[in-house]
Amino acid sequence: MNHEIPEGARPVARVLLVGRGRTLLLLHAEHEADRRRFWLTPGGGLRPHESFEDAARRELREETGQNCQVGPWVWTRRHGYFWNGRWCDQYERFFVARTDNHRIRPINRDTYVIGHRWWNPRELGASSEDFAPRRMAELIAQIIEGRYPAEPIDCGV
Image (cartoon, rainbow, N blue to C red; front, top):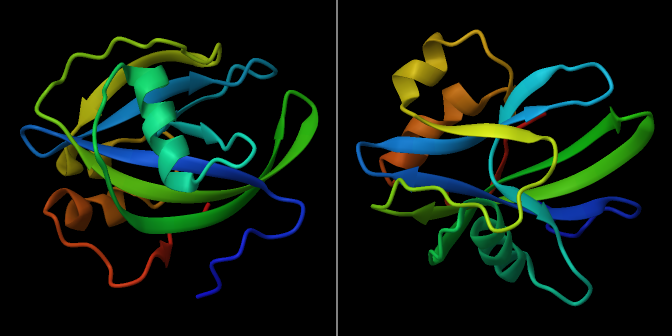
């Protein structure tokens, strides 16, 4: 797999935060332009000269208040979409982090985030909600169990 940041894409670090009870933290987001709601992992864009791992730790701390060690890079995706009338092209890397603390206290919450929830794989699979990536329910059980791919996989849009 090519691990280069595609030209023109915004580099983004995301965190699959696994909590006690084999749960995954997802943030509930609302698109301002059309009020569409969806669930996504904590994360955000890299600052100049910042590594993906450092950005993952910083974004996790800012968006959840959690100060966790960031583990392996397990997923990647390139995602193009319109956000409030503007075209966005993102290249994302997903890292695993684990915590026993389910308390979420954002330090710097994005304005589009309207809440959060800890999900177990069964709930994800049974839900009709929208998730980013769409294959979240299909892929997350192995991650929660601590079974990681040898190389990061493309998790799709």
